Image (cartoon, rainbow over all chains, first blue to last red; front, side, top):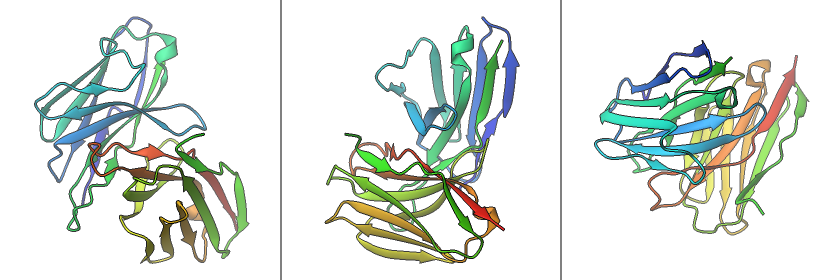
Length: 118
Length: 112
């Protein structure tokens, strides 16, 4: 259980293009989803926290007009990188929290989207 | 000083060895502790989670938390080449909406 599906897995596009990445919780409802960015050989950097039905909370230094997040349902959150430039090239990963029987809510991650802007 | 410190390695061991991965943290308010495994070009996979001091075992994996020393460990017994990956520790506060603070990750290589 607790499967998170992320699509697409790989995107290559020209500078100036907007790119949408989808994150779905397949077998559970996720009131909270998270978006991360990861550079090679580095740990995950939290970009924003997405709560269903409300505006996302962005981490300091993350441009909310650049990285648009929509969490319209309990199973789907989307990240749109607007007018992408080469410096936006990165590995983007989403996660969703699931409630366990002990009350702990660990995050389960998607398999990431490798974005390359030419 | 980072909130969570983890030796980045790389760590190379022979097949069958016991592996010990460690993280230290500075914020005594952390309540939940997790270990993730990340293969190259994949998202992190949850291995273990706990919210109390002590040991938790799952197959070849044992997670250990020592809140008094602000130290967590992951032990892998009878390590296999398929265990070769980057291991990330993560922790969170009780009332911060589930936000995780990650260690830098330790790159592990198990040689056959």
